[in-house]
Image 1 (cartoon, helix red, strand yellow):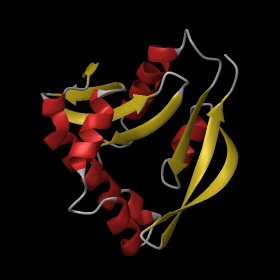
Image 2: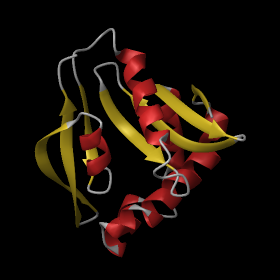
Image 3: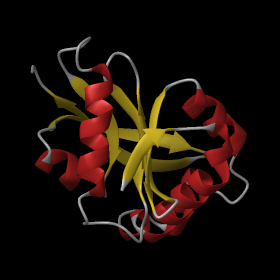
Length: 153
């Protein structure tokens, strides 16, 4: 496993990882309409690419294949966090989370994220606490997520 910074040329692999993870993992907790508005086939992945290029974004590679990606803002907010649907439960998420937190650890006292129903147990197991259940509306479809924080270091 290799952790490295995100590069613009990673977008094709990252988009496929995002799309396949949402459609294979999150589909256990969200219905097909919710999944299709969250990760549509015509997703504006250039917007995602621009966001990842301009933020604290990391990838994890296994045999030159991206198996996880995420980004963290300077205030400790994790915006994107995805582990390949083929690599769930192998410790990759824990490795990525620790690496992201370390990127900004000297500057902040807490970490936070809005996490899906599917990701909630992972974040809970890694020291995050539920702050608020949240409802997001995308194209008239409501999706539940959870605002979570990992407290003072």
